[in-house]
Length: 483
Image (tube, rainbow, N blue to C red; front, side, top):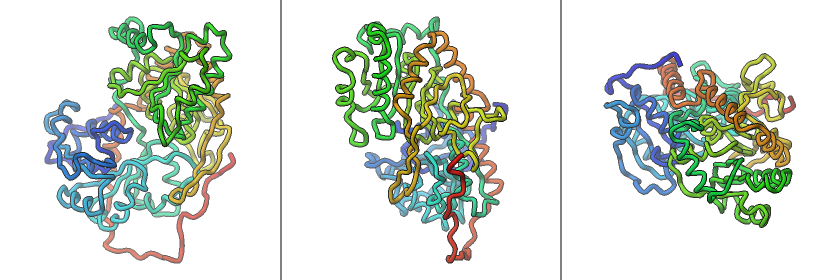
């Protein structure tokens, strides 16, 4: 990373009002939002309109500047938090906007949660631009999102697919002053890192592993770390692992583990205990392990280092943050080729370049390109069905087969331990490179660059505009569905 932005005095900084999850909690949105605030606190002042379903601090205004100073290594950050339920009401947003007088508004999560803000865009954008750190899980390009995207002056796509989708959805709009940027998720690479034989912490990891598996000899660990929700395809993961066990001599199978760091039972997913009871009889009852406790970053990093491979077969996945954590920890990955997980596998196109989606080839979920990073073991979807709901009428559900996932588990198993470590380290090296930039530092720099370009180009919204209500923009499919 060759470029950086200097530390600005507090009174010279632009102020950004970030509407998202409370940055003190542990959701994926909150984690990334916190990384961005810490990484840019020398250049921007921040106001977090901090959402939660039922917020215990509702109505409070909290100053997080001291904690941010400690995390960022500076002495003059300005980070204010307003606790709201959900993502605030129109009145709350308006009140905070008038009190704080931000130079820009930044939104971060599904657009349907911000309808009250998009409905205010005509008044807000006369004073400050609206920006959106956004992601969309899959195609077809959601033309029904056009009113949301059109209300934004800066669209920061978390995945390459999202950037392509933003442009496709707004193809019929005036984008002359709108800024599009690719800003993939970035994490603190000093929190997620490899711990190998000879490292100071190696004995701690081995002790942690021994306690985790009851002192039994374990030679191969497949790690799943995500929520127990349907689209994560956890039962398929468990089926793949059971089939893998059946392919081994019994004494070898007993030295393998599927480690599931997730809720055992969830109304949004299933009863994984019942699935395990069905799949793992008394012969294999020690071959799986649930981890349900909340872990510190230190101990989570231990789990990634215990793992020989991380697996995520999600049928819809905008990014896959646990895949990023695994790669930074030097752990190879098995992942479904869909959404932002494609970015993290670094598929290579016919020109030898990192694959970038286009209207002609919008995704690699059909396996158009097979060359990828050595740390990645992709599973290609065998079924793409159109799902939907009234708010989101159509979206692909990319389902891969557990049989194919089983083959990838075998493939990693058949590598030597040294080869797995070598491939994992290549993944970490690439993730930290300027090309990928899946680190907090790269992400922060990209956010600053995006806002600086926006502030140079932004023109306040007109007091009024004339709209031809007899035509509809963005109605039809505008990318290939067969490629």
